Image (cartoon, rainbow, N blue to C red; front, side, top):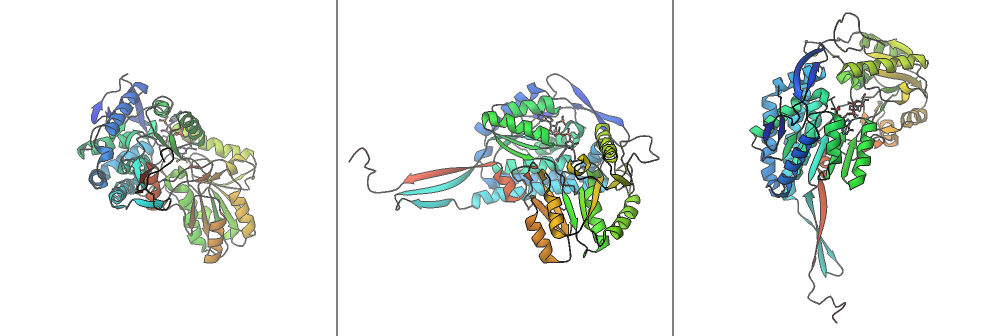
Length: 491
Ligand code: TAP
């Protein structure tokens, strides 16, 4: 576990010498003290990134060359998969098999953007002949510049990969700040980049508090682009700060995503995907399908199976085999989730399963998987993101009613629909106001496909070719090719 920041290709102690405790949420033990970067360290990191962009080889290098570094980083992650997954579980609490999945996905993300970096070289420049052939214009793609990435704690290395890989592929340089709660694997990414001989300053990693190090990145005039994933309120502040200097900004914020289950669905398949949609990663998932709408014909049978299966979920330290639900990331997050459940009760919701801390644990920030019913539509439990293993289930009669309930939200990140009737599923998918719609499943996420939200769930798209566009500018180059003079002043 690292004690230094990764700036300009070197490991350096934070200038103010601070550290912060890193706590394993399963045991509440302090497992390490991480390096507490401050605005002074961010200054060095942004300067290094600026130098690497303005004077270094990185942005001018052919995409095929950058791709080699990206592939080396992907391979470096894969070589250390088990070790990185264990760090992720200690830091975040998630079950080890889920952490292994995340790390493999992070490696795959670097491979994918290596392919896209190569594609940048191959792409024919778009030539447009204008004004009766007197001008020829072409559009070329260039990197945006210095990007600052601020990421949350729910998928630590994977969220880093979603931003670092496309930014580097595009030719940007970057300063990355992971969440203070989960900094371990982001620092290892620095070591992997260093081992891949990434030129100094291309990737800089500063750990520290969002309000200090994060804010310094957001406010820095030499940063061209802000890429943020996290809560709505911080996203809004970042957008306001970006407005001041017209920085490019992409935001991936929260959600309260609906899952509509029609009564022609296979009940076990529906229960399986509904559970995966909310209990996977302890429900600490921006796209978690936390509002489930079940058609009345199968509601009782669905609920019986959901309750039965939810009670069987093995809770525990993510490092223990067979555990499917680890602790919440922090004591604060656990208390927030427990408070949301209590508020729901006060508002009249019924706690059908779970609802508190599980019995038999002396330590650890555990919350039971919880199913709420009779949740009032105007309550916070129905409307606001809980970011924990808490699902609200409600019956509906008609397709129109389900779509109206699903869309009645200020969020629009994801949605899911389950039906054996493909035409109905397609119709509902088209009617849902969300950036991601899953049919007959919930949550599978692929590096190749666009990811991002409608409404207050964010701005811009990550992943796929859309993720690369986040870090590219489009330049018009227009040449005057006519044999005839322009003839405006000089006739
Ligand atoms: P946020 O405060 O939004 O944290 C996300 C990232 O932003 C972290 O790296 C954080 O740093 C940083 N940050 C915080 N304040 C900042 C500022 N003023 N300037 C720049 N960066 C700043 O989320 P949280 O406090 O961890 O969680 C709060 C709630 O947000 C959760 O309960 C959950 O509902 C929601 N949440 C949503 C998501 C997604 S993916 N939608 C992810 C995480 C949390 P530090 O954490 O190191 O201070």
